[in-house]
Image (cartoon, rainbow, N blue to C red):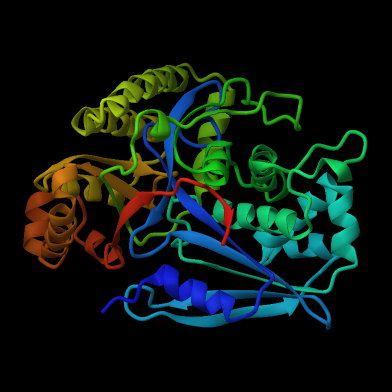
Length: 424
């Protein structure tokens, strides 16, 4: 029997006697140009939790008497029984020199977040340097899965420290030329952390959606060049889920089990886009048109029409990725998964989320049949990958050894995370 993972994570973390615990959700972009080149366009996106797996990053802080520490935990076998292991522990670096040395280590996301906060807030710097604290994190989002996992970790850290030190929306502690820490500025900081501090090509979409939550339609107009805060507009975040009374969205996620480096994909596409490659620009204009049209499908709760837009999105992104030098477009495994999923009854369409070349795809399905679709998807998938003859007949142009790459596929039913990053 599967133990409800969110409950288990909460029990584990609160048994550590923390002063604060933060949860940051995952996200998917419904219709999109890829992250890092979404600027000058708009897109519908949604912050999500899984129904059995919370698909979230968690971060805690507690005061201690001894030297400040950093801990990282992992969940063993989250689909069977929940055992939490300490992955690593280390003294918490506090000097800027010490922190910079950590930016190439396994704890780089946490330290890059701290470094950005030290630059952003004089109040944080004062309180952080004299504190004795233990900080720790754990995530249930599969690593490099295209679900915004690294952004969730960063945002949980930024929000956690801001809440712990009482500097979130605290205007009384601001010095001249400082901005308040709020969910807009956290999204902006998170983008700069990945794009500048960690040199991972990234855009604003994941960071705003995870920070603010909900089903939204976002405009990133004027944010192409990733300028410093106040030198370009903030994103316009329209919470269309509330406007259109959408409390649930009939989506099932399929993680391929193949990790990918999203920055490598985003970096190539961003370079092509920034050099005004005419074909790339035209493809993105078409994607932008699909994006605004998809809003009307969402408004009508017309999931079948949204599925048609998904299919167009996939065709265009395969062309874009091939043009960028990726032999199999959005990825060999991704295209196989989409074909398997789309031949399952009551599935309207499937598409990529994230950078491609691995990661995840997701399906939009008949909302009245979502439970049976979830069961049939898993059954159909395992029937095909366990039978080489059946696989070869369905995918004759694909190498049979591709089956081996699909051994770690997992499926998630999801719900809309309405609040974004939050204190538990």
